[in-house]
Image (cartoon, rainbow, N blue to C red; front, side, top):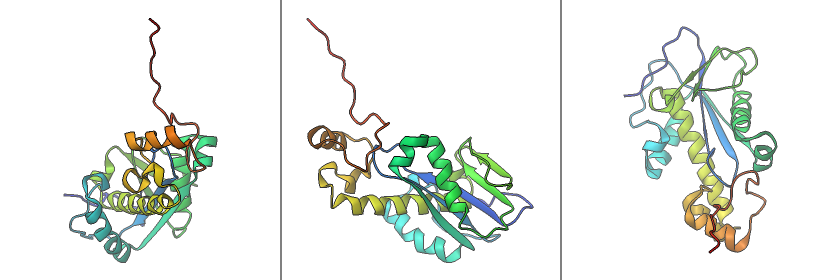
Length: 199
């Protein structure tokens, strides 16, 4: 059962991102501030939920949250500053949209770049432990999935409606046959390298 992060600092923002391991599309982050003693039945790490479960949770999270925001970092920015820094930048962009009186930030993972002068805590697998990080993971994931679904109509040969930009066989087959596009991350390994043996 998920729980609130125990701290005397409030308001507290939970942060998480989606799309770090993708070959295409942006990395998307969300920041969420939840009220004390809140309960959101069914909320969990977005990776443990079905697409339908995530979609049902989105309006509940948005309604019950004190504040929430989305931050996006483009494929071009990812190529320029690398995916780790782009993930932090997306989180910073989400946090920048929240009220300026944030007292504490909790982030899923083990690394984070300090945001302004606000103290933060990194929690490994925090999206499966704390409510606000889980809420952020759901909002980030659903926002990104919807974005990739929209891009699919212009680039159907990559099957982004199914893989959302992750490195599946079908996605890589599309890259092999049609080449890359403006939404691909050119610093990533788009095609698997194959070893050849001369006989």
